[in-house]
Picture 1 (tube, rainbow, N blue to C red):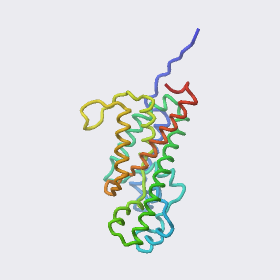
Picture 2 (picture 1 turned 120 degrees about the vertical axis):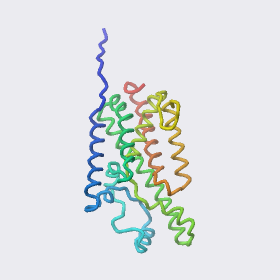
Picture 3 (picture 1 turned 60 degrees about the vertical axis):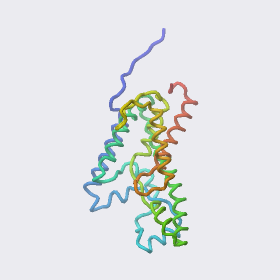
Picture 4 (picture 1 turned 180 degrees about the horizontal axis):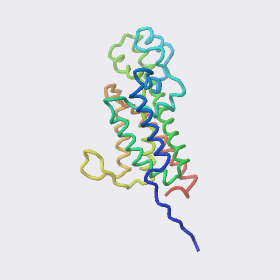
Length: 247
């Protein structure tokens, strides 16, 4: 006789709860201590760039000595968000994390979900830094050639990044892979959209935004794509090696 024990899904599982709490506490620290301790500046992910470009920008006042990549930023940037008036940055990220992350944590368990989340964040940072470095090389070339148009085009390459969006895109990619036909109601779209099409649509928008090279939207498109790609590859690999955990 087989035995089956039903376990009710946790509405607010522990990893999701603690991730949201940590993000909220860091955001509060940004609000209260930023002017005195420059919290946001210390937590952001700064781009890797050629030393020649870094020296040139520093000498001309476009970059300070503190605005440099440090390894710890690979983790800390995932818990910092844009300060006011951009409060919707953290609100939207945390809502999305709760909506889709709690499902994955209930399916996988807390330990596996936590590992997955951080790997997606690191994957997002890796692709973002790679693209930024390539664009920094293009910026350096434009500066050396005194090409003002290209300087304006690639100046966004030296901008730092912050936010949990990359890791959360990985969470959504995994959700769309495991539950592709789940219908979602998305703002401004008057009909339900299946998760698989919503994920593909978001990825297409980020790819277009990233390739267009626009610096005005302040969105790290390739970080989103890096997180989504990491999440997809992880869940694809786990699905093949541990069929009992997946559908």
